[in-house]
Image (cartoon, rainbow, N blue to C red; front, side):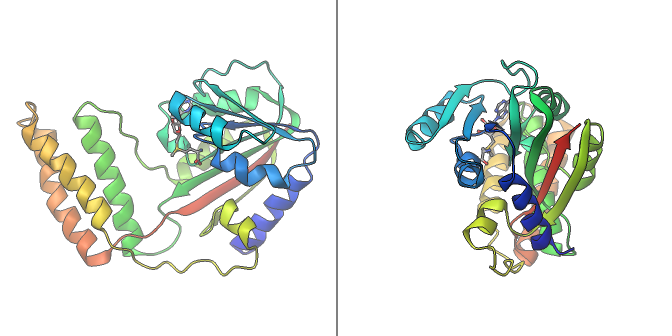
Length: 259
Ligand SMILES: C[S@@+](CC[C@H](N)C(=O)[O-])C[C@H]1O[C@@H](n2cnc3c(N)ncnc32)[C@H](O)[C@@H]1O
């Protein structure tokens, strides 16, 4: 089945959700909530949780007129009872988490039996493309450089990581796809042709790499061999970015039903 056919069938299952209590983890200001709410049954309400109170405030303002509530909360320690929700979602956030398995376990804990769990995560793989490989390598480098400087830095996830985690959950009838479009783009125009994997200018990533290289050079720990080798790798990476450009992520979309 093609990616947009799979996306279509995932959206069809979401439209037929029974029950109306939905939770979006690491919701930010609620972009995924705004995407999904119109396709849920009449009467459905969403709760968005995020660890960042500023994102929560933005969400409260932008979705004030909708049946949506927000709470500042660590997704790894949800303050909700078991089986409280009919749908639990997470988008573009698993790669930001310190403990993905703990968060997935919390998603499952608060989901009722027969409820739906939806994951949408950008992934830099799935097609043969030097630009995609280079983009993934640049994100890996940025995460490693941040970690070496003592800052939070999260490596991009792979489809294999995600499938392994999902395998460990108590889900039935899991359907997944790698799509060039996220659910929001798909809903805006289901007949739209998937965007071509065109190469973008690498300027943004090169700027981020140079910024971190400056930090490495001025860091008192810059003599450390891991920082030195990162600074050397940066030169090769910038050259690759200049040659191949960057491309947008593809989306891993997965919908499972709780046993
Ligand atoms: C890239 S943003 C995605 C936001 C939103 N899901 C979207 O698609 O627009 C990642 C979000 O994860 C949140 N986050 C990171 N760690 C978290 C945690 N432990 N608990 C809750 N939210 C977390 C961040 O504050 C941030 O808003």
